[in-house]
Image 1 (cartoon, rainbow, N blue to C red):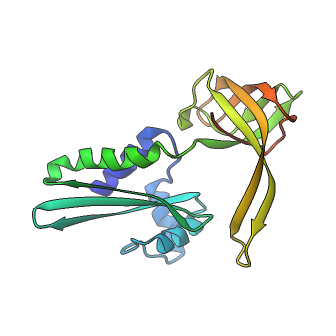
Image 2 (cartoon, one colour):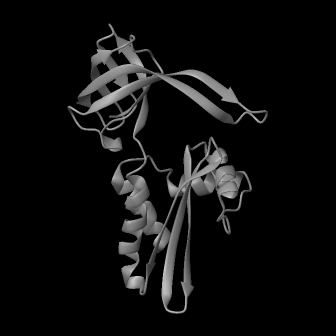
Image 3 (cartoon, rainbow, N blue to C red):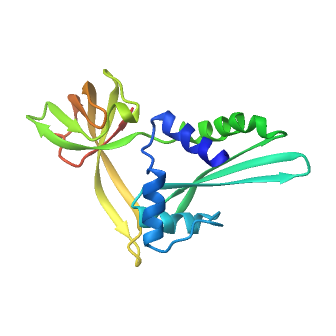
Length: 199
């Protein structure tokens, strides 16, 4: 019950794209990966790599005496680190929805909406890979930045990234999964694969 409500709350936030539950189960089954008992960050990261996702959310619901406790953690799959953790206590399963809204709302608000430039037209108009389904609206301003240095450790994990500012965009035309934006300002001409995020 709680896991379903967590998924529903995250999907409704439109801040992240969530892997379909059936597809997730199918991929993990094909890889003989068992999610039951997977409550630590290391396990979540391992599953996230198999699913090819950026982040994994894991949680626990426990009962001590007459008090329930809902805890969730968000793990960055690329860095392998826990990036956020939230919890809420409540005294009846009738209040589980309120607890879910509290913990999910807390960390969803911290997740930036990030995308990439897919196409550039005359340095004045760009197409990006995020749109209405990601919570974008017409007139919204986005920052553009570029990765100029990336350092990996012996395992291939990215341990450091250096960025430079490129400029800003304004959303003009929206589709569910992509948008067209005009260049408002530019320190450098925008390029394909530059990173965009809500200002």
